Each structure stands twice: as structure tokens, then as C-alpha cells.
Amino acid sequence: MMKDAFIGLGSNLKEPAAQLARAVSALATLPETVLVAQSPFYASRPVGPQDQPDFVNGAVWLSTSLPPHRLLDELQNIEHKHGRERLRHWGPRTLDLDILLFGDQTLDDKRLTVPHRELRNRDFALQPLLDLKADLALPDGTPIAELRSQCPDNGLRKLPPADYP
Image: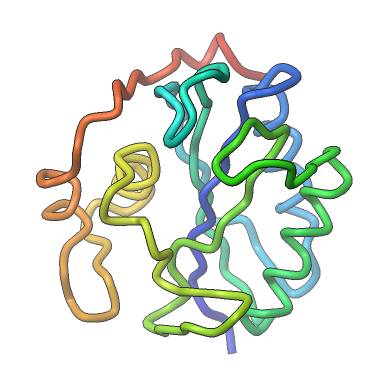
């Protein structure tokens, strides 16, 4: 059975917008998965250590029959192919792919928490979700639009399409 999965994308190294564009292309080729839509890209200040470049973020809407942990494996494989290294928590990275929402499921284990643990605090994830589906809600029914209106400002700036491939 196909489920809607919303994936957050982020990068702040090696031409971040181009990294995200390549990641979207890779996501479109996942097995048992269809790319439904892609959000615009946004720039924002980094979360955590400020001694790093600003991030570029976006989101995609996938329809997939992959189970959540298999999807996570596929996302981590794409990150690895993009040179992702996990050197510092909330540090700079070539590519970060996070499962933000997976159907109406909630999960919390050693490998995966869905909805994403920090979603409520990240305007750079909430706004792209709203761009994809304005009436999107958490599994508990909380509208994403409500979370966005209460979210701390992280200097979010929408990038014009000419700034990314």
C-alpha cells in the first residue's frame, strides 16, 4: 500500500542548492516510490553551531510502498553518495535527508522518530511542507500551519528558482 512520505532536504556545503537538486533527482528514482512534488528551496541560518555557512533547505512529497526503515536506509544511501560525513552534531554537511512525516504513523526507536523530533522548531522544514500541501497535519491532527505560526524565526529566505538547477 502506498503511503505519503514527506522528506526534508538540507545542505550547506559544496553548492547546497545543486546538492538538493541532485538529491531530488535521486529521490525520484527510489524503488516502489513516486515523487509527487518538490517545494521551493529556502536559505536560513544554521541550527546549532554558528561557525558554518547558511543552509539551503527544501522538502519533497513522496508516495511510497517502502516501509519507514527501508526508506531511511535509501535516504542514508543517497546521503552517503553525496559525501555526507557525520563529524559534528548539527554541523556542516553536503546533504541531510530526514523523514519528516510518514503517512499518519508515529515512530520512536533508536534509528527513527516520526514525526521528526525537531519539526515544531524548524521553520525551514515547516514552510516547505506547507508549500507542498497547505492542509498537512501531524498524525495527532495538529495543522502544520499552526506549528509554522508558532515557530521561532531562523532567518528563512525563499530562494528564487534561478538560484538552483
